[in-house]
Length: 363
Image (cartoon, rainbow, N blue to C red):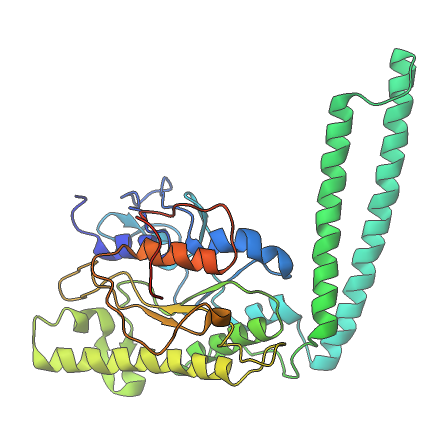
């Protein structure tokens, strides 16, 4: 056992399901998160492989929980065991990343300009690649008395051309998305609202727009880092959330914890309702065609237990899920659920994830 640090462990393990390395330095280590496993294959079809959003502060250095680096509690997504994918915390920057800045008319004009510029760059690079090929062939003839490229020359040129083709494909995907899903008819958000409720819902609106416009099909949304002690004055609870969860069975702190937890659940409900009210291309709702997981890495904040986690799986998953049920899965690892979701997203070749012991039946 690594002693204290349950919030650091829970944050770093929630989507990776591996035991993270206890360190407060730069030698942190977790695992590849389930969203990034899916994004590696599914994300090729959209302009953004995945989106990472947070309504908490972004800290990547220092000790945040009894010897566990802050990076574990402030990053849900990991593209490798040593590479967290930093989330965007500012709704304005997220919107500009997805759709550009300015009014709807200005964004449309800027999009056309960017497309022309990107195309001209690709034309230039294509001409350059042909020139390089001719120069290499000429050099090969001069040096060896025979035309042709060496195997190493060809490999280098192929790598160069492959990178160009990948960029071109990304541009084509973005163009198709822009044509089939025009940019939203709303102004660019001003930034982070002072009200936490408005902040959370604005970021949820951004995520909803990203799904609606098919800019991405994979996303993580960190409402608050594990162990967050944010106070909730705007709903009548001036005490910190973390403080309240360590209630010691005191009725007043339990009641305050319930009010805060209900608030978080209502924000989740807000997002689900937006997804349910939005039609997808097949006539079903976005919610019908989505799998949305809500939860945390601590089952009991008072005792810091990591079993019997509060997990909600919403949406119909395109017909793969059976919603509207409460199912007990005994001691099955959370990784079993993730492995099943990986399957249902059409990802191939993944036989094990984290500490999985098989697929989770009856979902």
